[in-house]
Amino acid sequence: MSDAKDDIDTMTKKEIDSRALTTCAVAPDGKTVSLGFTDASGQPVAVRLPLEQASALAMTLPALIEQALRRQFRDDSLRFTFPLGSWAVEQSPDPGTNIVTLRTPDGFGVCFTMQRQQQSALGEAFSCDCDCVRRSPFPTH
Image (cartoon, rainbow, N blue to C red):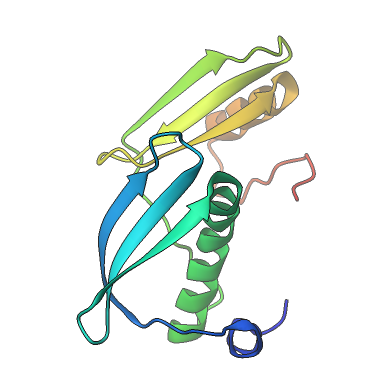
């Protein structure tokens, strides 16, 4: 992975230093999301993203936050975690998978599709009483 700052410096045409996230909204047609900020001079600015780009951003941010945390504290063992408030398992339209939703107490949630064998492996990992690190036997992207 290249240094994010180098990528930003070579690709950015206009840089905004955010001081506060002020608003988050979804367009009436559901095709875009808008993130409002206050910039360094106190002026309101907004970024509108098509749903596909917002989704890509959501997938990218956790790794960037973890990388920033590790650099800031010079500790590669750090993880950016959230407290679990609730979870739900429901059948997906595909009979071979379920949808697993994990939510924080304040409502932030992430949904995953899980194959039956992944569910079994995860259940076994949780039922193990050892202090070892347990990793998925399934490839990740």
